[in-house]
Image 1 (tube, rainbow, N blue to C red):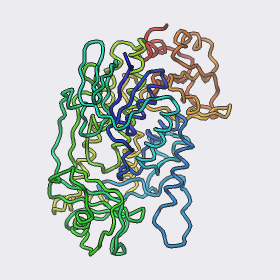
Image 2 (cartoon, helix red, strand yellow; image 1 turned 30 degrees about the vertical axis):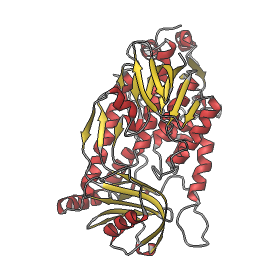
Image 3 (tube, rainbow, N blue to C red; image 1 turned 180 degrees about the horizontal axis):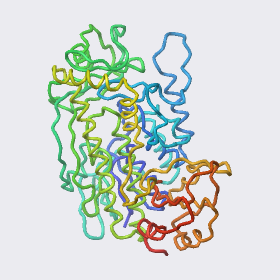
Image 4 (cartoon, rainbow, N blue to C red; image 1 turned 90 degrees about the horizontal axis):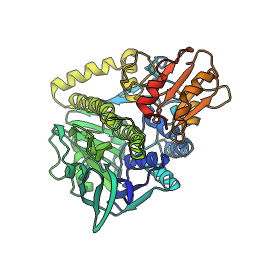
Length: 504
């Protein structure tokens, strides 16, 4: 075969998946129909699982530098210095445009796990993630071809033959990371079910006159919703007059100006469009993420409105879950059914995100019933319990896979423990292998795990704080597969066999 895997789409999800595959030694080709990265304004922040994933692959310094640059662009009075980076964002998020202040959130809640240095990363946009991952992919030797369109493919029991323009390449697997209108999904015939759109949304960076008439932040009006800031010229409008007639038509200054005036009632004038995009609340999800040798990840597998900023995060989570499982399948050590756990683990989280965005659309409607519900939600989110509940959901810390264990840690993403030698848990996860942390220097534990040493790191260390677990087994995506808080090693061997297959 020419490649082990062909990935369609060089956005953040496709690049993240390609990096995970290369870390595992897989030969991967990424193809992208666009000749240059898409600079239209999209996601502006990330949640905890995404920040953890990037930190645990050694990308924290690059993200911190980009975050600092973005903060310097915040709207502020002329001559005022750029604000200092807070330890956590002052706003915990929003629900349908209702902002939640971090000062009301109880961060002592146990569902806010210790993310370590990853907790310092939140203000990074989608273009930043894509740039950082593109540089990482180049370092790892990922082949990325831009300006190449996937037009068709044929699949057999043994391979996939992909037509790229006039060239045919052969691969073991094809993964569609090619967005909400995925060519791969349509060609493969995945069922894509859900609810139809009812809004037209615009998001843009513009130059405009009359900006002083616009209130900063999210605002609800009699005709819709709009947001202005935090960067000068950044606007967002939502109108409940149905989806756009033509999603692909060029977005003009006149269109944006009309939408902004309709929603705000302000006589603003847009003089220049820097970047703009339309969106709707079309909410659909593939019923399975795998059909034979073809898989989906990111927006190709699920689409929804952008409210709550979950799309990018959901896609990065898909890539982290799929990468090591597909690599294990290619390399021949995957236990039976491992690749199918990609759908069983990720589909429920995607389903939750779709419902989360649908609920926000409901309270954004301009009718009296929705506005009454919005006032109730506004009151609720002013309380500590309501703010904490929303922040926990937006943070992604609640996400847990069901591994059939009664242990509270198993199935969760590992907390970023600090060790007595000065390292942290994240420092041991950069090469994408499974890791067994032997925190009590147990020879028996080392002996039990030794037969899997070709696909597992065994780290002998001590926790910096007494009371931590005695041992932790992490899958390559950093989710805890087994744990014990004493010398009882029951369940370790079955966990190793479940996730890492039979010993070499």
